[in-house]
Each structure stands twice: as structure tokens, then as C-alpha cells.
Image 1: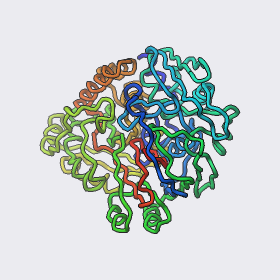
Image 2: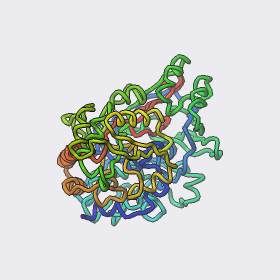
Image 3: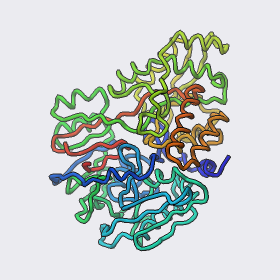
Length: 517
């Protein structure tokens, strides 16, 4: 298999300590975007009446605010408030310059960016091309679990004070999407200790303080040059509080002690709205699905995998227990913002009789016994509804709730349960998800399909955006028919928002940035 794919699959550390795939955490750590820089999105940022203070209740404390060690939307919400990178991902999924004035592919091996003039770090020092070089070196030379994502980068050249050139040894059309999440501009003299405890960036907010176990405070950087790409700061001071309990976050919102509460469950929406706050349900560029291990009986037979899909009334479960905005998917791709999405591909129908017929045809007319693994982040009612509908057609599944570290450490373990609930977000570009979980040599894979392998590898090296998207659409069709997963629903994040914070805009990548766009 070609180097583009293999470079992503050999790191044992990649999953060891992360929640990329567990439903309770972020899904994909490796964000992806489609297309080339979108100049149409460079309009002036909106004008805002600044709040003196904005309080945000997160569902927990960030694990790390070192950009190379941040692996979830919770971490990234802080990181991308403090730092800017060369580029970001627009709401429509295109690559958009951020600190860069321009970002372009010179050829299939080379990218070049030119920085905007006059940018400064929070300490007043100028932002130059050296800052971009330092940002990539930090990802390549440190202890990041995503270090292999940048292994195809063989040289980072400072062309002049404002221009940097990134050279790869193989075609890497997926690299800009990784840069948009992981790469940030770093000042001279940075260290791992400073990044973890007293970071200096060039983003819209300065680091102010971190009271471990309680809250982290940012202060608006008055020297920031807002752009449409990231937006305009909406507050002079931002307090991120760490509030694991849903009931406490909702109570904080209704008492007026917080302005934004994350992860407000469907059943709490009415209470929030009747209490005078608003509920914003934002479509996240991600999906929920059940990975099926095809290396074991009875799931080696695609008819059994198809039966797992057809036995579920996914829309009924989603609408009743997840969100009114959630709907059944035909593939891993949630909507048109995800490269590879096709509106022509129809989801599996809810067809219990058809599921029973497929089980009988495959020699399992008496049903099957199996295990569905999940983490505590999955609402119990959702998992129970899935298992109950499977049971109606003879698929008897036991629920196994695992600790996050165990769950994430056993994706390729042949002794682990064959079915596991997962999410992946954001999914602007499916490269990392596919190469890790669904390529036969993927580090997290228990699936093998030569046709899928070839399409995954071809898309990884195809530099033409439209051709690459077409390859992913073809792959989606192949995987729909072969069913290595039960395709569930698109992800929706619900926030409780006070009237004072009405200028705030949610994002498709689930970062909670105190910005308006």
C-alpha cells in the first residue's frame, strides 16, 4: 500500500490516550476540509458591541492546551481562541486563509502561504514566516499523537519574512485540512512548559489564568486583526468553567451565572426555553455509526451486516432520543459539507421483514448472539432502543459499557466485541477516518475490502478536488452496499444561550469560540 496511507497507520500512541472515536468525546481529532482556499469568504467581519464578560460552561476540563497535544473540541475551543494558524476551515468545508493572506498548492507536492502584514503576537513581537515554520516543527518533533499526519512534510522553507513553503515527498492533498486544525503560529522562545501553562499566541484572546479543576480565563487581545475566517471577539473577558453535570450547566444558565451551556440534552430543551434562555441546535460535521468487525462470524457475511442496518428504525430513535434535527444517513458523511457526500445515495430502509430474510439466507434464521460495546457517553436509552429493535428480528445483542481508555485501546483487538458505537467529527474530509478505521491495513481496522482499499488510496493521492470528491462518493456507494458499519445519524450539538450572548455563533467543528461571524 502506498506511503500516503501507511504513514498514518503505524503509531501505536495514536489511540492509546485519546477519545477520537468514543461517542463520549470528540470523534475525529484530525479535522479535514475540502477544496482550495475560498476567497469568496474574505468579507469584513461583523461589528459587535463587546460584552465585559462572557461565561461558558464546558462539560469538563481541557486535557491540554498545547496545540500538538489537544485532541478534542473542548481542548480546541481554548487553543483556537489563543492561537491563529495559516488557514482554517470555512462553514462550507473549504480551506480559507486565516493568518495567511494567500494559501495555494504550487504543485501536488508543495504548498505556499503568504502571511498578512502587521500581525503580532500577544507579547507584541511580529508574526513572520518563522512562526509558521516553528508551528510545523512543533508537530513533527514533539510527542504529539498526530505526528504521523505530518510525516509526508519533508521541508518547511522560509522564503521571505512573510512567505513559507511546505514541501512533501508524496502528493498530500489532505494536508491543508490537517494544518487547519493542528498547525498554529508560534513565537520565538516558546517551550513545552509555556505552551501548557502560559501560552503566547496571535489569536483573538490572550491567556489570563487557569485554576485547575475550576475554570480557565482568556482576555481579548486588543491588537487582533479580525477576519471573516474566524470572526470578531464578542467579549473583553471569557471564563470557561468546567461543569460535568448537565443539570448544573442548565441551572447555571437559568440563574444567569453562565451565558453559554454546552451539550444540553434533548430532554432539557423545554426547561431551558421556558426559563428564558434560547436553545441553539447546530449541525456538526460528523456522524454516529456502529462499526462492524467483518473479520469474525457471523459478520463476515455482508447480508448479516445489511440486516443490522435494515432492522433499525433509525429516524424514529434519532427524532425521539437524540434531536429533531438528526436523521438517518446513507453513509459516514453527514451532509454536503463533507467531501464524498451524495444526495443520490439513499439510506437503508427500515425493513424488519427484509432483515429477517437476509439472516435466513445467510444461515442465521434462528438469530445471532453478539455484543455491542459503547462508552458511558452514549445515552442508555439510545443503546437500549437499538438493542430492542435488533431483538425483534433475532439479533440478540448484549450491551457492554467500557471505560474510555479500554474502548479506544481495543479497536483492532480480535477479542473485543464485534460491534461498537462511535462518532467522528469533524468530517469535512474523510481521509483520516477511512485510512485508520476502514482501510484493511488501518491501525484501527477490522475490515478488508480490496475495492475500498484502492479507492481510499487513490483519493489520498488525487490532487484534483472534484476528482477526489468523486472517488469518495464512489467509495461511499461501495461501503453502503458492503455495510462495514450501521449508518446511524448526523451529529447535532445543542447549546443553551443567554440573551446577552445572542451574538455568539456556533460552529460546525464544535469549537466553542467566543466569536461572531
